[in-house]
Image (cartoon, protein in one colour):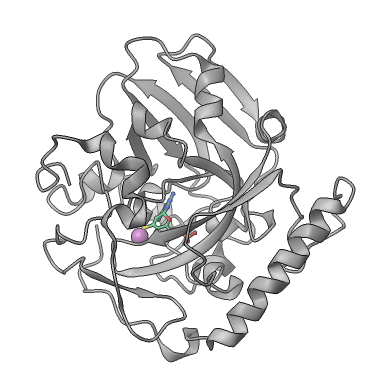
Length: 315
Ligand SMILES: Nc1nc2c(c(=O)[nH]1)N[C@H]1C(S)=C(S)[C@@H](COP(=O)(O)O)O[C@H]1N2
Ligand SMILES: [Mo]
């Protein structure tokens, strides 16, 4: 069940002076370079945030140099209903999630179905750093330096058949490890989906890390989707299955609130949520609200995907 309250304003403890995160950003750039020049990191060599450093082949800033959200907020203010509906509790409750060994099954309408071990999967594709805005449907936003690889690379390798029109993603189902799954907060397991052309768009990545290190559990370790022109709920975490299908998948949020959470979920300041406006957003770490951008600022890259579609109807 989606939360029934209009999102709270971000409390004062989350507001970080600009100098602090700008310095952090420079610090991050330096540490990313240090990580890149290091030998293959072993688990004992933790990065500045305590995670294993990841090597990236290239780095592109898709957030117009807007300040990167500080790590403590990105890793401490999380939506991950499998653990808790309280954003501040997710980090602690997800600490024990076992992310190794981890299998990701690629199946459905493809010529090359396969169960990949996560470490095998990660080694197949060069990792990149992508700095993207993330806009949650609740009205807050962040700028995150993700580490990942284009979903397109995995899709090409899997050779979709002509009947494949959509891609369905599924999160781990394990109530023993995920206390939130012991309650019917959502229809478990969490399911999300993309149209195939959205899935192969160059902006779409599978993320395995952020801030130069492996993903913290609360951010969706070991593998999560990142689709920066869509609302945050599309960024499904801790993926165990990717299935190619002919029909549009019915996602967990569509089941929870079909009039509130559509399949497309494109960020659109002109189409309000039934219970609140989507015209503005509060960037975590900033005081004044800023205007939400069409397709979260990525219209140039993705608007053509929706040419001729009524975006009020296909919300
Ligand atoms: N499996 C799963 N994935 C999920 C969620 C969830 O509850 N379960 N929440 C979504 C929502 S609403 C948002 S805004 C983002 C938040 O990602 P973050 O915690 O890394 O900022 O994760 C998305 N992915
Ligand atoms: Mo969200």
